[in-house]
Image 1: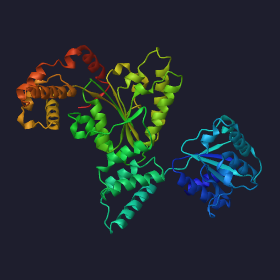
Image 2 (image 1 turned 90 degrees about the horizontal axis):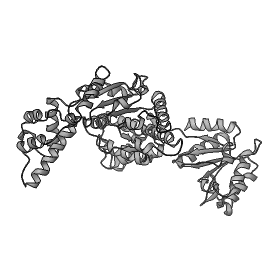
Image 3 (image 1 turned 45 degrees about the horizontal axis):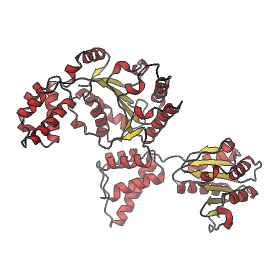
Image 4 (image 1 turned 180 degrees about the vertical axis):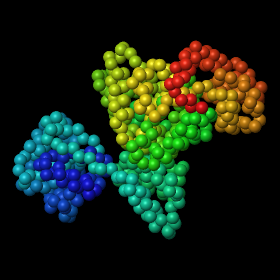
Length: 492
């Protein structure tokens, strides 16, 4: 708060008479402005449509019963001969349509001289009329750092202990640090509320609390739109194969979660055949690292109005940074960035916006991009430095296919030991992980129709009745493998 008071004091020294603060944490704003008023010896008043103008800190009496009317309030402020601070909470609904409050606010902002009042407009979101915009200074309260967030969590733990006869809140240092990192991007009040929710349900801070914490944070920041929150991030053990990718991620986990290093991992591009496990791997990265997973839907980005598509992308990337540390998943990226001249240059502008963000971002947002038709991606995106590594996800080997059968059979409460997995693996040559899963699902349906059980023979029949994508699209798969040879690293 001391830094905010100092910075606001510099704004006042610049003789600006209209300050805009956008924040959901109104109590924190008022607390900061009170500190500023005390430091500079200024009178401090607040206004709202329900209370009118009140003198803050000296009984809180309303100055004028009619001052709930914004026009009356602004006239009283304009007539004040002192250099007082007036904090107007949620004035913005009255700055559309009626020209009188707009003109009064402009006259206050244009007033010259030291002994003139300063107006501070406070709301969660505020867009000034064009007539007033250039007279205003916009200010943002600083968000709590990790030390402050850790102190907030510990304060809430102490309060819980006091209410529960001295019982200690159970946690471990690794989980505590993850909670603190996942609270970044929230205001003091929001972080305190989430920390309290995590602790109060069972008096413990555990790994099981992290998904719910991330979900609540996503809802709190109101990120719905082009960004989606993946509520079920698969455990990395549920991904068959991809041993090389798993090792690569394991080596970089500490570097990404551990701090603000210059060489913090930035992201990977996964290319390969459809159903090979790219999307599951993207989900599993977040599950392995205990981070929220955000999915950027390129189909939702595009807008028929000029410039709106790029604005949507910038907004989505900004919101992803608010959720940091997190994993941002760009699924089937070629659909949004495919080269072509049929869209009026929109895809090129989107590409430029994305490349700029990838090069300049400072927030810990780990990018996982997936693509099927990699040849449709622009070359600027594939050069070294855009991603830390390009991985090729091929069809699973025989050993990996056996592992995939084991995972999906167990997930559907079918005992893997009741099946000859090696035989099933050999029978599924050329199958992707998704096709193996679908064969098991089909076998379940067939067994239910016959009022029987899924057995080895039924599974083999379903595999034999399926033409895998590697057969249907053999030529395309051959071309993809030829492209990947020498250009990518095998994920297996």
